[in-house]
Length: 256
Image (cartoon, rainbow, N blue to C red; front, side, top):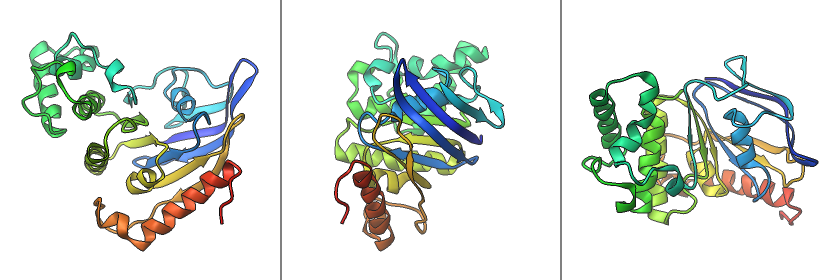
């Protein structure tokens, strides 16, 4: 899916959150959005998802204006604990979106088990979310997003509350999913290193009110990425520094 934002603006009453956002995300690209806390990153995702109408400008998916939640869209939230139903098993949590497709219960469960195996949770389907670690719960949330094979995947700081090792594991899972499925992904994060590691492109937003794009940077890193080798590349260090300068400059801090 190709996502396009034209002069997008968003307000809460008299408070201007986003202003003049122009972006085109080509089909199959993984776009990372970075910016200071409170700049409107989550608001941007909710607007793209059709959960709230734009105050200004337009959002289009494959040329069609977004007036509600688009088909073939999935969202992964940061607060995975609240997005999973504790009274349902892991398998039934993952299978839940398939009800809309009218699949029989056995088909839903089989598809959920397939996706759980893919995200490294083979054998966990009969457990409940509260019986799992935070990283495993977030894998469940990712599996639920993937079960319908979305063409557009929105992720709102999904790894922000996880420990460093789990975070790296899920970053690599995201890259594998993107490489295999080819979905268009918009990934919000406050972590500069993460944005460069997983992204095909990084966009930096300015502080509010009226956040705007202050940097739109393609990420060109050679070969298949890995946590040790990629992060040690001179190209990675240079890209990370450029994004860091944009974030600090947008907030008024010295960049030299």
